[in-house]
Length: 383
Image 1 (cartoon, helix red, strand yellow):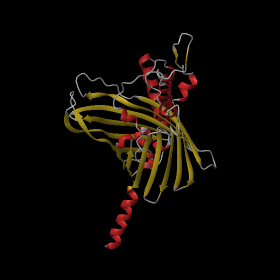
Image 2 (cartoon, helix red, strand yellow):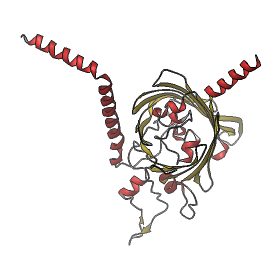
Image 3 (spheres, helix red, strand yellow):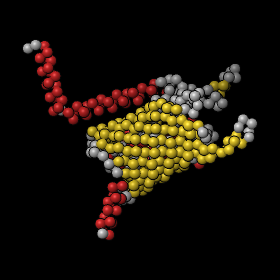
């Protein structure tokens, strides 16, 4: 048989095999993609250069919903009815959130208000679309020129418009979120285009989930001024959520800040640990454990009843970097409660960032399919 005929026969057999095992190959491909994604996310752990300031659009790192606020501010493996969970990880747009809509309100330091509107749209089986809008209003300020003369008042605000697509091929879910972010101060404007990508593994029998995401991949489309230089707050995160059998408790462990440019430990030169024989200040050198621990966030959900949950979280980085040496208080800790009814779910959370205050969050999630069914029933009864 000629060589070309042999090649054609081999290709034909391979194609037939692929057709007969299509779903199997899809699952293997997704699994390999998730493994590659995980390795890429963990590589920055070994970076040694120290991170500085300079990131722009840092508001994109704020927790987008009350559930995330209550669990330490970072959560990539927790699913539920909340239609805004995909803002943390695009793959968290699962069937649990189908036909849901949510309103999230967060009171930040300085009386800034962070508002989020999100909804998961009805689509085909195993596929979901979602849309979300985030807005942070910082209020009104008084302006002054270089001589101290008043120039009038001005406002400042930041906002994000996001679109999400997620596809489930059990036990994996892959998702992508496209975002347009804007920031305005007085007459100055800046716009950025970004994307989040994520994956989620859900165990078919156990309450076990593993999530990973790369967030804020993008660039600034326009800057405040021609001299402005923007660095997007890119981050890689990986986490696990697990509920032991016959226990009313679900644990979560999340690693974040895996992709900043190196070490995230900040050594304050004004707070030396001591002095050498020549009187020079000694600065504490962080250990490998301190570097790793600052990238960890621990969370828990106490499932007291199908309609009642208590949530807690602990963020090591917030505890170490924002707590005062003389009085750390509860810096880094967070708390929350969720009450679920037939058609709505109400949550409240509080995250202690500093002794001066933290983030107070409230949300309401509505099941649009049940609400519309009730309205149709009432209309039919009235007619």
